[in-house]
Length: 425
Image (cartoon, rainbow, N blue to C red; front, side):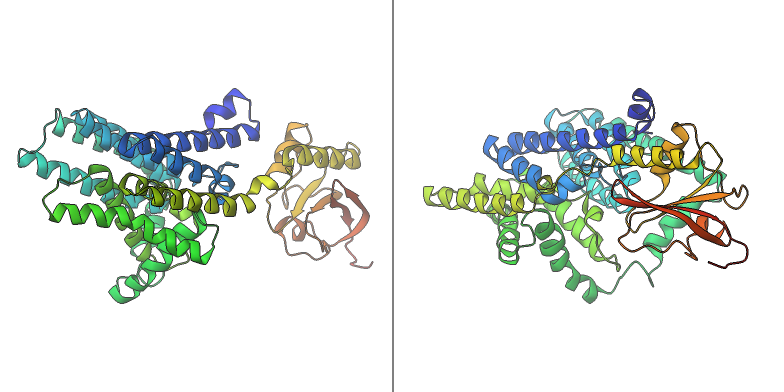
């Protein structure tokens, strides 16, 4: 539904959806800066947002339209709603939290871990309210509004499930409740997964460019504000709400991921990845001696250097849209106005982009096996390619064939196959 807006404005130009994700990525940087600034000070906002903005993984996932990519923005927005409910003493801001959690959950199932995160923070607010230690209007109305907004934004999935035999429900229950393949409730196995997920997957991949020594040092520094606040609490100080929130977000998020038995990929951490930047930046708020200031600045420079060395921005642009359009036009010219079938052989791509532009140019390929034509064009993006007897469905469904022409165009091979019932060369 989000993609529908830019795609409608720019009339189905696929780049529009990618621009939308890029804009959301920029807004994520701004939101990290804003929260860092109002929670800990301007310096923290600059450090946290700067390191987030130059992270190679962050840049990579902000450059294309894929459903997990906007998850960090909506995760931050859910926490912002909770914070505003505390700051303005108006719990109607929980409506924003409910909406943002629903959006994040639809980006990826693992973002459902935000439900216990926000639930614990809501419970903390309830306890303070019952103890008369905090005030605020519309607590129950805001809570009901947040739940309603969550259910309302999730309702399209329910409607889809009612229509298609509960497809999403069965996928979610399999994802979370099938202990043999996904969930591990053995406490020992879970505990031993916590450190690698935290230090390697979260800190190492996102902040330190997988530099082992930097990963360990930053991992420790991130936990330092949590330790300091807990220590102060034991000595009678009041809880620091931002640190409490970031601590709950981090610990519940890591524990939830540790329960998951399968491999943890970068995009699984979308609901969690802003946390280490804000905690790392908050170290500034707790340091005192000027010597530590200098050391911390040098450390930030080192992290920035490592990240910039591995930045995707150093690679030349692939110009995928122009390249796909040019190849589509070449196929059309080779077809000579006659109907044709189409197939793509590529490890890291799908044929949807080619199919889209062939249709846009008025030459939509016929489908196999319902509409087999006299010619099949095969675009091959792999270094080694043998289209004859290839198992890909569009090729196998065409039947016995032989290569009539082979051309190299715009860096790919384009084969024209024709029917060959005898199978002879």
